[in-house]
Image (cartoon, rainbow, N blue to C red; front, side, top):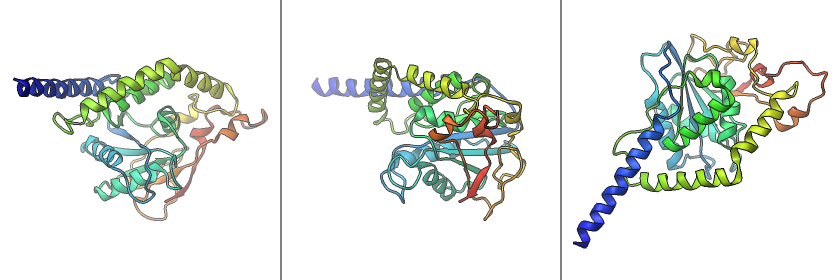
Length: 279
């Protein structure tokens, strides 16, 4: 009898995990169409400077399988700064994507240190895409999509589902991940994470040298027809030191936000910065 009870509890937890992950993978998405897509993969703290941990490896695999083989062009945007160690999460994600056989365009976003900043700094890199997929663990990807809705509703209308959810995949882990996600959500509400993020975002975008307010210049940041050429913010291909290498994109640091008022009056300084160098 006890064995049956334990089996029922375990089965219930597994079903709960599956349902919650499936629902998370379908929240805040639409049905946008178009020939080009951007797949944004979010990094996780990585202690080893040379090798991805299991979480990040899984996220890259989910991103690669999310790519539409019929898309005219796919841009893979790898997000994550050097939160731990000297090597950015984005660099490690990109290396593993190449190991998995992805030969298309990769752009690195290496300034972010949390999920909100993942979206802040990735947004200018995906403006030319007809369809946008944000890939991570389903609960985490849902949070990131919500942030995109808050920051850039125009881009959020292009969100479509990725392939991060698969029934039965890591089924034993999903109940734990769901419990963690609920705990994280309660903590976020208690500490008003979103309110603080929005206040900071409002201050940043109001500043003449701030980030991410949409401008006509941003609309020129289109995904090019050459998948091996990283695009600059002006739409032209960046110089490359090797075919298919990911482009490292320069972004504004905190010190840039307090620039003098006589600075170029473009509220999308991030989108106007060019690719600094190729890795």
